[in-house]
Length: 329
Image (cartoon, rainbow, N blue to C red; front, side):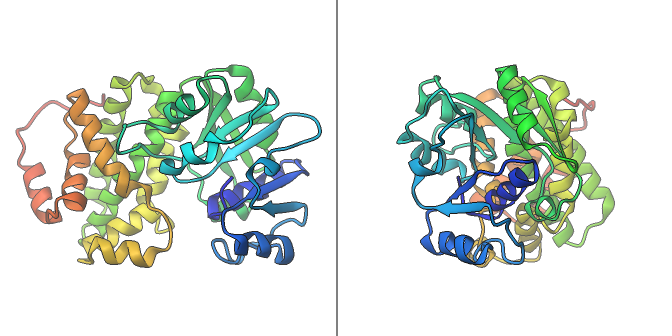
């Protein structure tokens, strides 16, 4: 469910994993028409040929209807859209919801697991996919590792078995909170690293931002109920390194252009895709305040994006903070 680049890449991966009945739901009729006739998402994922067995539709309920067997519903829509997409679905025991979205709602500070629990009243079988996985590289069949989190181990194993292939390896965990928090917060830290590079700084600052950002990510996650070790895995440090060091990352790109002096409005207007870290910087800042956690990197990005602070001024203030003992969480 979701006709963007990531949703399209996951549809390709499902076929590669041996699933022959793959339906992609999209709101845009033009996307649906292009996939069904040209076998390509010409709007959001141009240049990647789709297997002919992938069909597309604008009919949500029809997309998840199957004559027999388990139906995996991969939710690949922006975090604020999850509730609206899922609310009117008629779900049965054959359905497993797999959230492939990373973020924290601004209004309620909910991660996708909390949103799904609220919308489905806790009755749906759910899992959460996260980890270092750029859509283009998954579509190109480059070796990729992800984490599947679910409180129900059997559900996690079903999803793991269904989507894994020779070059797409998935691991399972019960730590839903750790996987969700890591996936959301790394986007904010990627903006920080992009700003650093955009300002012309080198490898030392980037390494410091990634490491101290990981400490903030871990602390917020543990205070929210996560296991610390989860943040050392694919959904934590793995995704953090990927997003903070590659120009393929939309969040890194937003930061880089901010560091170069562009306005946020111009960047977002020209990007043509969602950079989750922009919205998440606000919810992460508010969550830190709620939990009483000091997060100078995350707070600094919030100040730059939402308060108009100058990146160099934020850097100067953070570097002048009182010296202290290093702590990782």
